[in-house]
Length: 214
Image (cartoon, rainbow, N blue to C red; front, side):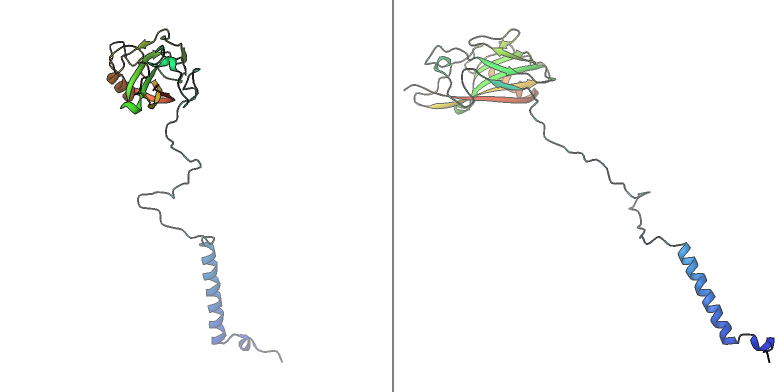
């Protein structure tokens, strides 16, 4: 005999079980629709309205370099080598030949020769040199340039003359200036050093040695 409709109705326990399963499914669906795809969301930094972006470029700061082209050499001696006698007090006492390479953007070039072994004594100041470069002939000043005063007070080259038997190292420094120096024949060695120290944007150095005859 087939069971009556009343006998097919679920009992109270079965009904409660069905309701529990339905509720669980509903919670699972809700959690899935509100999920974060597995990634954790972090609070923005104080004052930020969006996460900071990482820059795609890196900025590097470097110290200024000597501009390409700025150089000073002499056909009379190699850097760091002995300077010929003719440019000393033991010889003719001529100023040496110098070739300078210019600096892009410079307004003027200045050459100052000093003796660090004699408290920085200034032997030569040549200002107003063409910023594109120039050749300074032996015992001469290039066109448009001017010779300032040396430590002895003369607007000329002071021949190399260390004490007898001593070897001194001399520095011929080429300065690139962003503005005209204003150095003239009446400018003292100290004033010239002050100008290039304050106004030069870069420099190049040629060294040479001289030993006084015994």
